[in-house]
Length: 468
Ligand code: ADP
Ligand code: MG
Image 1 (cartoon, helix red, strand yellow):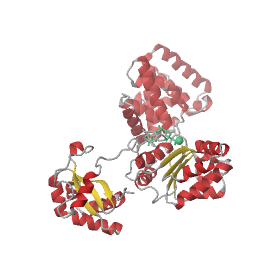
Image 2 (cartoon, protein in one colour; image 1 turned 135 degrees about the horizontal axis):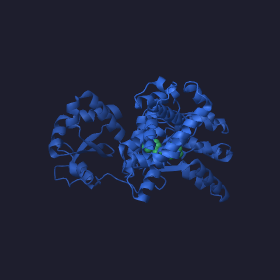
Image 3 (tube, helix red, strand yellow; image 1 turned 90 degrees about the vertical axis):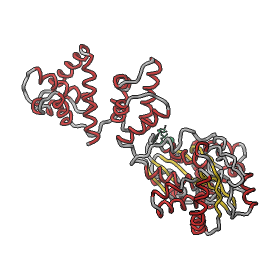
Image 4 (cartoon, protein in one colour; image 1 turned 60 degrees about the vertical axis):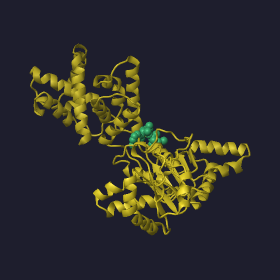
């Protein structure tokens, strides 16, 4: 084997220097990158010969002793010059560029033969290329899980084993698990990875029994460096698969191989699972993903639109983020629907288009703490009236219409009955509420601008209700 990975020591050494040196000194001189390693050296990429000289003079021995402290091994540093504009394709080093005068010549030669282009492997057929950390927005709902995932991806099998991500549908479990796979796939160690759903694992298991291929099945799953299994709740009531996974787990665990699982609930709630397998899942680190808040939803939509090259104005992100708070899959579905519509009819996506196209989606989602008070306050503010005007008995035209609009909105976006609404609006009869809603319905047909006005009001009401 000639693959050596000292990147963890390197990263830790850099981490410590960043704390020990001034920010200015660190950012000035540590503009350097781990490239590769041999048994007793690390090759580091630097942007110019000048850097190389300065680093050799000033920092090389400090870096080497730090690495010695961390690893207990004597690891030498070799600098290689890679011009910043071509970090991917380093220039051929001149005579002095590799190694330095203190190093034996043989070492320099050895390095020259090595490919210094970062190795990218052919893509892994089970990993979705879109599911990367770069495409994953971190918010308060997922930052713990995401940070743990990144740590695991850089050093699989060393900490947090197994790693179990749980949470409701559409909150980003699969994405996060595959992001670990995608990042680890390009590690210098070139780990062997299997990424599979619990369902496919089960099918594979059943087929192997039928085809009498169990030895190869066992070998396949027990020889990986990283095993990623999605939706392990599927294993409930599948005793055979559970049994097989239990043994696979033990083999991988003992070999310090990384395992990552996702589940739609905490492992403790997997009732139809053997106790011993459940207790295996509960080892290591279990973290949950919760629904994202408004700011995170907004950021996710923006990121998705960017990645998918969908041209959408900010106010549309706003209205979607306000109206869809259930999960990220629903956000994505809304975006895809809009984009498909816009393409089909050859239109730009505007606020009006969004409100029109997503009307049904919006009305299905629950709006938690919308109160009649919020509605009355928002509508009366918009028409420069007081809340008491809307609740009171005055029948002047400037009051009647906003009052009817408030009732109409309350009927549209809350679960209150007309009787309850009548009481909330100053003790009116339920027929008054019904009449008001009919009036507005009729008015909507006559006045095309009214719809937009009402939608704007609804948006404000939800904003107040969601942001608290
Ligand atoms: P789960 O597995 O929990 O049901 P997924 O991982 O399939 O959810 O996520 C649903 C969709 O939302 C995917 O398209 C995924 O890329 C996207 N997604 C989830 N979380 C994020 C996030 N934090 N940032 C960006 N996109 C996300
Ligand atoms: Mg999933």
